[in-house]
Length: 260
Image 1 (cartoon, one colour):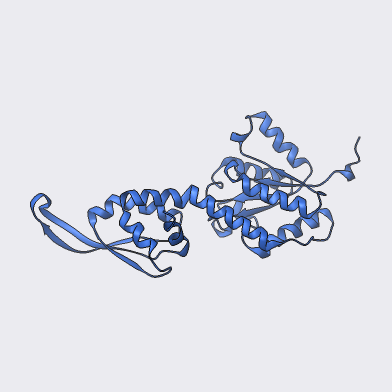
Image 2 (cartoon, helix red, strand yellow):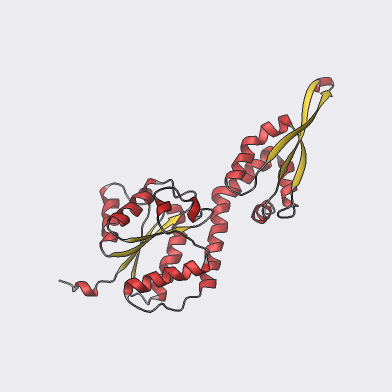
């Protein structure tokens, strides 16, 4: 029988399958930095493992020698039951559980019960270093030198691609289809400066749902205000409500718009 003291401690990374690339990035960096003296168990959701007992066995095995758990939290992942299941399992076992927020999620925005844990931003360099300090503490070793700047750059690269594919990209595609004028204005805007577009109420109502979709993935807020009424003529005969659409785009939103 193997000497238990010789068994490597495990860092358990909980994530959804769509965020596997980020999990692997952390796994590789931790194992490399600690010269493979620690195991990093990268979990997945039930969709990526056959189902049922096999998935539960994988989780159970990963938790047996677990010293700490990193839970990857994004707007997409926090609503998935498996993330909360794994985090709960770690908490019940008395394991230190750290929510790692990324791609638009923040520690203050975490839902209960994840919000009760001490979360961090994946792109916070100081907190990134604390991850390696945590692993060193569990190993009883010194903290290795880690190129936090290089790791942070890779995380930002992942976030940009992930957010674009799963949020902003889809929302802006829809906006371009129903209100291309808004997309053009955002593309040429100055970050933080209020933009105003003359809009009829009909135009606004036609794209209001799409604008809400953009709001859900960025900090921008669109507001339509009525400014007057005019009579139409011919086929457009009748009263038309005129107004303007105002918003203040972020640098991120502008940069994403310019890729279209």
